[in-house]
Each structure stands twice: as C-alpha cells, then as structure tokens.
Amino acid sequence: MISGAQFEKELDLIITNAIREDVGDGNHSSLACIPSDAQGKAKLLVKDDGIIAGVEFAKMVFEYVDNDIVFERVLEDGAEVKYGDIAFYVKGSSRSILQAERLVLNAMQRMSAIATKTKVFVNLLEGTGTKILDTRKTTPGIRALEKWAVKIGGGENHRFALYDMIMLKDNHIDFAGGITKAIDKTKAYLKETGRDLKIIVEARDLDEIKEILKSDGVYRILIDNFNYEDTREAVRLIGDKCLTESSGGITEETIRNYAECGVNYISSGALTHSVYNMDLSLKAV
Image (cartoon, rainbow, N blue to C red):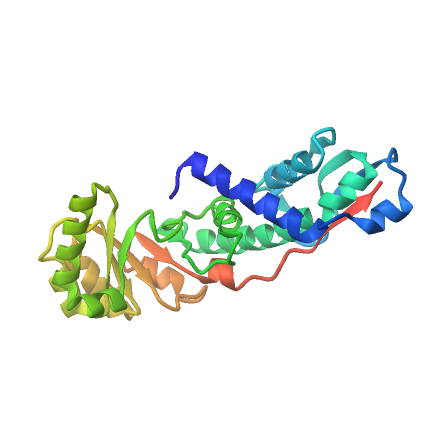
C-alpha cells in the first residue's frame, strides 16, 4: 500500500477534482436564492443498515469548501448503523453546506456500501486466519476512497496501483516467455533500477505452482481459479516458502471453503465493483 503522504495527496486530488467538476463557475441554485450571509445546520441521516464509512472524508470535504464550517461527529467510521441514525452535524454558511453536499453523499454512500460488504466477508472468514483483500477493480479516480472503505470494513488492501508492487499475471508470463523467465527478468529489473518491490506470481495450475517454487524471491503466489482440492494441494506444496492468495470468482457462498484450504489471503474484486450504495441523506435541521 502507498505511504500516508501519498494517500493524503490522492484524497486532496479527489476533492479538488470533484468540486471542480460539480461546481464549475458557481452553484447558481444557491447563489440565486440563498443570501450570502445565511447560516444553517444539517445532519447526515442514515436510511439503511450496515457499516458507516466516509465520516472523516466528509469532514475533509467541508473543511475544503469552507474552513469555518463546524463539523460535529456523532459516529466514527466503521460503526454499525441502522435506519434513523445520525452520523454527524454541520453548522455554518448555508451556501457552503449545499456546495459540499453532493460530494459528501456520493462518497459516503459508496464507501459505506463497500465497508458493509467487506464486513460481511470478514465475518465469513472469522476463525480461519485468512484475510480478505481488495483488488485494482475500482472506480477510476476514486480508488483511494474505495480502498479506504475496505480498511474501514475490516479488510486489507492489496497493491494500490501498478507502481507499488510487482504482480506477474498470465499475460505477463506469456509475453515474457514463461514463468521462470518472467521472474528472472523481474528480479534483474528490480536490481538494475534499485527498486524494492514485492513480487506476486499468478499460477493457473499445479504445474505452474511447482515451477514458481523453483525460483527464490517470490513474496506471494496467486492461486487463481483453482478448485478446493487443487487449492489444498497448492498450499501443501508451497508450505512456508511464501504466502498464498486465492482469487477468481470467489463468492460469499464459497469464501469459507477456500479459507479452510489454508490460504493466507483471498482477494475479491466484488468488494469494490459490485456494491449497492447505502441510502444516506443530508437534511437541514
């Protein structure tokens, strides 16, 4: 995962671009009918059950729009919520509150949905020792928010992007001329460029598992689209030489079975690409 400073930079870029996109040359609906000195108060109303996420991000958005807005936090990120709960109150310029409203809602609705789904997966893995990972299957432009939401839901982050980890998948392997060549070329590249990046290698069958194990320096093997029996055998073959990760169409119905095969991690794109937004509203009080 990227450093804290890089993560903060990503969040700043998201807010800046989203406000630019939404406001343009002015929030004319507010400018037309709300006096510049009008003051107001609003609450974030939860209209669904699940895990709330994005409270801290909402605070950042309001501060970006108007540093004089008073933000009163009621719930922390990661709290279980039900219909009727209030996550926070904001007080200050009515125009400023309305200018921040849509970005806050869009972000929190999606982040809360991701955190809620992640929590379901985390609960299904309880007691197995296996951890759930997200993937790069995120919404372009807001990856930092979606991966933050996975953490809030109790999951762990895979690599953030193409630059913070090496992941040799099927196409890399085929284009490089095979597994061993791909690994050897990667280690040579890292040495030449002075980069310290972990290497994950994808295996499509047990023969590829065996070939990967002939090379040193592999951090984790991605056991991709294996059935339960072959997954157990892959874990046995790998032993403690490196970490293991199952992936490929794993669902709520099958995730426990894969975990019980003994893998260290299970990755799921569904955490971020297949969620239904939590129903939230910002209401004047």
